[in-house]
Length: 319
Image (cartoon, rainbow, N blue to C red):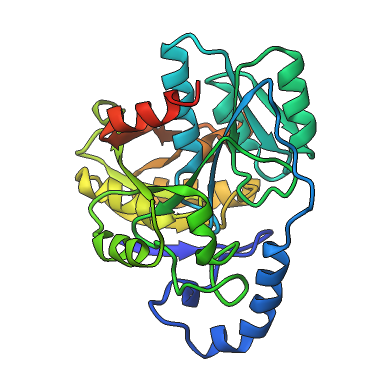
């Protein structure tokens, strides 16, 4: 199976970010990373703690593709089971309409350039809990509990802050968040866990696996052309292979890619020529306008949490 990568309109992360050790390009960018790290560690003297609403932040240190939106949705489901009135909060980004639409399927979602303003609106509407999809690096809010998500395949990459590596802030900050989520499938993250446990104290670890929910709707006797513009394209491909799909081609776009008609036409043409069906992620499908969706199917993926009772207990102890 061939892989074609596109980076038009959005920048793709460089490969050296995920090397086990920094290379020459990372070393050249390292001085800039130190400045970014200093800036990210700067804290406002006054952060806001809202008393009338509980706040849960699901974010990441690694830039993109860590499963935080799926974890935020799982938290919402746990709260719904207990009839606890909760909502989502996301910062407004023009290129991330896919995640906004996905959250809106599960509940009220406040979108604003200011997370503080969204939180004020949630209080006005008498929500008991606000679930932040992203926001660990927010400088204005004190959260009641935070979760840091990692993809098992990439973990912390080369361990450096952008642009020398894939981290939004230093890994040393992980101790203040306490709750770590590893999302992925068969990758081994035990060594990374040991390193974290040796360096930092009182960390709580949670894990989950990706499940393909609509496998019964996928014809395994057909050939497939797949495409995605998500944070971790390879995790998507690995999951499809694990479920025995015959992938003859995959097109990789940058995260939150804004698809053009010519992009989809090229994929349709390749699939037609090879008598193959087209498959993408639900996030990518939601990013397509109605006109571009014809002839394209999407996967429904669930994040199955290991030791879910332990996770539920952590969430509900807030209430």
